[in-house]
Length: 640
Image: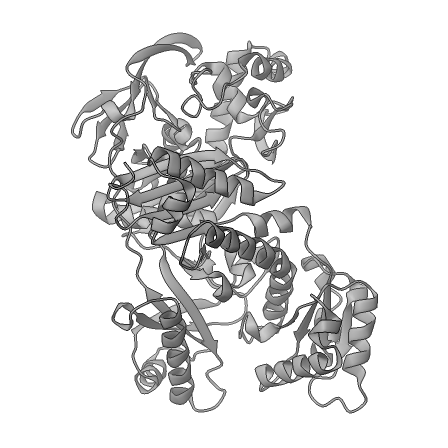
């Protein structure tokens, strides 16, 4: 199959908390792969995913990587670093005009301590106060230095301070301690949001740079000749050298949203909620007419920041979420068993009951053929884990599993209803696109609990975020203060930078689109207003002048559109028809089992039914009916 797969091959990899997912697109159609995430070294799981794809394509690792046009990656490194507080010590050189206002609250908002914040002069420093502050921060263990000043010519003065530090501490002396400026991350006039954004970025910077360059170097050693592209949570990708650390936060779910947006047009879905059920959480987003929404000042790790991200919400329910009895019944999450030890059924020493164990105990899985037979589930261990829950609930183990599954669906449904209510969207007019490892198992139950119109389920659901990475544009963003100098000339400089950056990444200028947007509104209620595609600074200045509100920030987004393929129906490698006993609605029932590849476009199905693919198990519960589509998809409705 190696020759057949050689034309225009792309590799998209999403590293999750439990599994590393891969989607390999090419003339063969699309190939999906799941391997276990390796928390001690994510590189191992990523290369194992590539090896598995190469094996299925009849190629070696080097042949595959030499053939691939593109390798895209989304990573949880940044998210995990914030969750576990495993980043380096940040030393903050904070301008005196900001120090009294911001310094007291920063340690409660971002990962920095009071003793690592030093007040420094904003501009002139004839007495050397800045260098003395640097020395104190280094002596206290700072491993990254961040400069955050305020006022006019912000970038000029932060760059001057960096040069002053570099002159006193040449790189061979200062070693690996990076010196960053807040203007490099955000130009927002909201000083508090800019400083918080810059601190979080500095906290993630060393970890992300080491990890991403290590992956890129490994890919080059193994034959890949093009730059590694990193997914950003604003809906684009960029090469490692042009990626800002904080923009990788939440990049995996962003891939799923981009894939859903691409499919929404093909499937005719006007209002669509995306649901990505991972190992530790479920991420949801709302699409209208195939378009997602941005949040200009989102909250990351509890801190309001100034970095536009796709509007995503995370609910603490996933396959590895721990299940426990509470006064009101059953609670699932937000605590998780993670990749290690994971669910009890995985046989890695986990003893606490999880949502995956609940599905195992109700009988939906074939324990001998989990992940296409690459993993055997320990049903006895799952049952032992759920036994205390069953006793607390006064039921048997499968009954406890059913209650846990219902509780998980209810929690996710409440999150979806809150999202729809905020945006004035009626559940009855909204479809659910269910993805992620457990999306096919929970999708119908979530839709029923939320009163949604229909469910879209896919054979590639377990790697949907990896598939969606192929729909992300290659994109860079550039910001400027609209009051800083002559506007048309400043925008022309940004456009020239955009063209140069894109050319360096191999993008032809005829593929490049530069879009203008402005930020308007007061702090805490800022919104982005798109003004359209632009080619010159003069054109941009006219659009900004004609906008309804004054601009507080100008942004140019340079895009080279992604070229996603519509997924194809799976063709082979899945189990044939059979039957399985599953606990449904309080009784054990014989349930037919079908392989996704056996479905034909237009075929009508009725629940109960278990659908199996190489890497996924999906459930069509009683009372639901579905029609198979052309792309390995099902359109599911509740029966009248």
